[in-house]
Amino acid sequence: MSARLSCVELRGAYYNPNTQVRALEELLHELPVTNLTETRSSSRKPSELPHRLRKLDPDQEHEVIAAYRAGATIYELADRFGVDRKTASRILHRHHVAMRRQGLSPAQSAEASELRAAGWTLQRIGNRFNVSARTVARRLGET
Image (cartoon, rainbow, N blue to C red; front, side, top):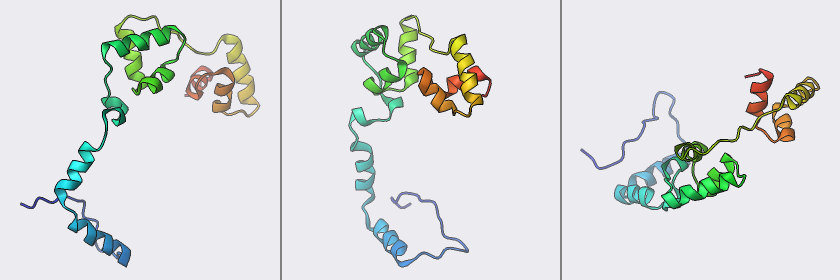
């Protein structure tokens, strides 16, 4: 069996590549496979890994808790520490930190309803009240 990477075969009844595509295909077959795979896996630094692969150490978790208690949002924490918002939320739940529920008050909901009737987008209303468009949609029953 060949050491080449398996590729999806795109050639078929209507396959008609131009000369540039043919030239690229020829170059692809000339690339050493080992260097290609090593470069892909080892070129990333741990801080550049996708958010879902990053794990915080206990000191960083305590920093997350302190920042949340100081007023940072889950989204701000996720950006600051390079993790997904769900990871930041799980850290807080695991340490039994009381969560702030941000939403619309009844007065804000009434105003949001009026703004929606006036043609405002959910995103614009959310920006006005510093909540997400999804929060506005749920409150207005548009989910």
